[in-house]
Amino acid sequence: MRPRGGIEALPAALAADRDAAFPLLVRALIDGVYSGALRLLGNSADAEEVTQEAFLRAYRALGRYPAARVGELRLREWVWTIAANLCRNRARDRRRRGEETLDPEAALPDPAPGPEARALASAGSGALAAHLARLPWPQRAAVVLRHVTGLPHAEIAAALGRPVGTVKSDVHRGLQQLRRQLEEEEG
Amino acid sequence: MTGLPEHLADLRAAAPPHLLPGVLHRVGLADHYAIRPSILGPVFVAFTRRGVSRVDLAGDPAGFEAAYLARFGRAVVPADAPPPRLAATVDRALGAGRTRGIPVDPAGLSEFQAAVLRSAAGIPPGEIRPYAWVAREIGRPGSGRAVGNALAANPVPLVVPCHRVVRADGRFGRYSLGADESKRVLLAAEGLEIEALEALTSRGVRYLGSATTRIYCHPTCRHARRITASRRAEFRSPGEAARAGFRPCRDCRPATA
Image (cartoon, rainbow over the protein chains, first blue to last red):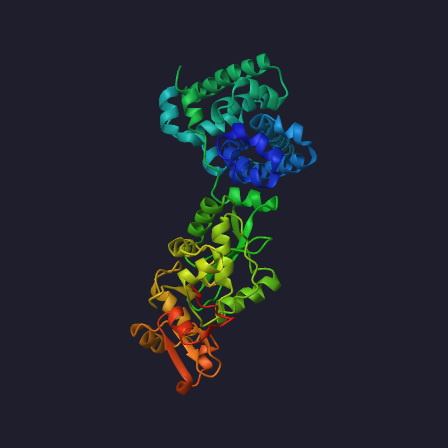
């Protein structure tokens, strides 16, 4: 029997039968993890690799944990703990090697700058993604997990290993910085 | 300024369709499939560690993969070929109808359906049995209609030869792989003499007996096919055969009721 229901039922299902429930875990979280990784890393190849690696590590960890621990996992923040770490390491490695990480399409500057709203509306996702890539890591991670992936502050705090208050202020300052960048572009 | 959070939310993207199967493949949880030739043309054959899980006419791979995921809750990814031993048995089944002994993954099958498929799997190539025969064989007499439904939902046609189960009146009935007509094509390819059979069934003949052995069979049983024309008796029912002093064949097990 395949377990039914949302992600709430998954920890128990994973504890009972990892191989039967794991595909459901991947299905439930893969869009969010991929989206977040894509916006944290700026290109789809890295995002795909990180997503694969994150789930592979999660699968192996589930095999090592005692059933009681698996049954109590908060799966989304747990998977994001793994994924965010992989994203940070990969972004850092790329930066150290001086590699261009943005997709060409995503790196294009806004061709017709205007006020923020218009810039946002006309520039499309590419320009905004490029601005995201210029944020310092803690702000970028907080903004992406909060507003792209849609995680609550508490889950972001757990995933990034930072206090909730710090995460909130990172989100806030990240958004401010994004607005500044968009305005600079305008003017 | 409003709008920025909404625009960020728009940056959410669906994972590329190959990513989920890729992840499951990487952790060893994906099933695999390969294209093999068959009497009905190329087919997709999916397999797990336990055996063959799905056979379907080869078409759009993405469509097959999506339908597989929806039906079994498992990803399926392309492979060059099944493992060598499985490949040999699968190819014998697909090419020559020799279906005995192929492992079938029973995941997702009800107990009833699994029993129906096991029974159908025992029917030799070129022979046919009625739906009601399968029902009786699995200890569920009278469930012929449910047997028909179970066979129509057979996930592994050709490998489990559901095409060898037909209606009591000799008409071939539904088939789960492509057109109903495929059933006739398969049986003809296995050597069933369809016209001779239809000549019998149209006269109401359901069983053939040998006046030498005093044994009666389904007309397509290999023993029935060996009966000399002059020694051949025709029966419309098991009762008629029994009254004439014939006993049922132990291989094709015609109805005794």
